[in-house]
Image (cartoon, rainbow, N blue to C red; front, side, top):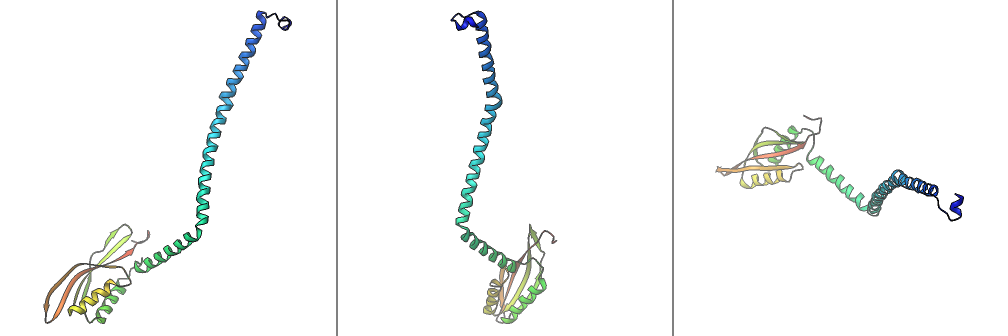
Length: 187
């Protein structure tokens, strides 16, 4: 090595330099393979996490700015759900419904004959149809049907037919459908 410092390079010096360069190259490759690539993957993960957190933060700020609107919309939805609960109850009310139909018919001076048809269940909605025959003057029956359509429960009139007048009285036959929600525990 002293010859190297004097300016004379020996083959032993070349071997030493090559060995040092080899060790340095091995250390660089080892650093790159073991540490640097892992750090690049970690940086990419942290960058993605940061982007997701920033997006969540933007959403949170938007929610915070519009919280009053969301509260108002939630209250409106709760009100609608409550109204639907009243108009589409989950409990059976067949007897009550028949009494209500009869009361409306009496109020309008209409004679009715009502019979329940086969129920139809689709998902969590049960359709309860009634076959109604209503007899009275045309205007009385029309007023009765109008009251049914404006009833507190959701009702749908289908298959409406008017029979020929007899003794000045009109007879209408129709199917009156009412509905109810079924909970998961109800048959």
